Length: 439
Image (tube, rainbow, N blue to C red):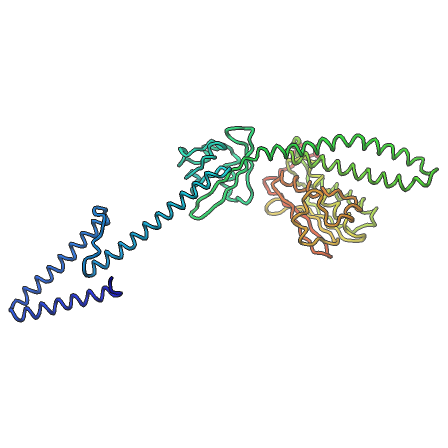
């Protein structure tokens, strides 16, 4: 409808008008008055359509007269085109928003949209059933409605890589799993899932393992006692010597598995022993001494031990001993005779660090992510031969979680492995009068 160069066309129109007025002025002798009248009309024309544009922008008029000639017709036409496109986009966004709300309302999980200040922007219907948060709560900070220190700390830490488990604020029998997903514009999507049934089944599984392990210890202890008695008479019956030895080894292995299962069930069940001031230095020294003794029966290793003095923390000595002993004894079991084992406990700028490295066969990269799974073994035959239960690193993982730490593993196949963990400064304590009791 309009030229690709409307401004140039407008300039030609003005030039043509001026030439016409000049010619008429020459004929009539009124060239000055005609120029003045023409300029006034042209200015009035611009002022009128400027007023129409301002009225439209102020919504006093609903439609622009884009059919007028000249530059204003082009301006009004382009504005009308943009208005129509904006209206279409607005309708499309409204349709998408409606579909989003319909889909999120159909989800079995509570879904809440939060702004950068964690104020509620939108909620679906399920949020009322699970969390007691309804659409009328829009605009409120969510921490005012979910009164849990753990939840407030989780939001403020800005690290949402791991979900948070929480007890429902409206029904303490319900267990919830919360996940925060940041997205564009400093917004957050909070998804809340009811995992009560899953949690109940998990607790039943843990209780079953703990109860079964506890019940099996008694008959197994009787079997071990009977085997020991029979071994006393094996000297008169050489044929029974080897079978009894195998029975004793396997019964001892079963007892170790049951003991590890009981420790793991306690750790996974969240049952905490009374905390005490524990000397981590003393625990590592004790484990290192036991490792040297165990190493002697396996052909001997070269030990490099470096243990910092006076490192204490509030915790459970039994758990810390189990974690450190599993790491060190694994190095002893899997490192060939005359190999090197390094044990380090040191202070760092951020707390304390424990490390054990060996010159064993190493671990292939594909096995590393699964090493802390229960009963996962890189080499089943070799692990059973060495007396491992397949639960040691899982115990280590759960113990470290209680101290807000995690196991770090690095390994080079054929050269050895390194297992380490870091304790933050706020997990450590100064030595006090109770330190002697913990040692």
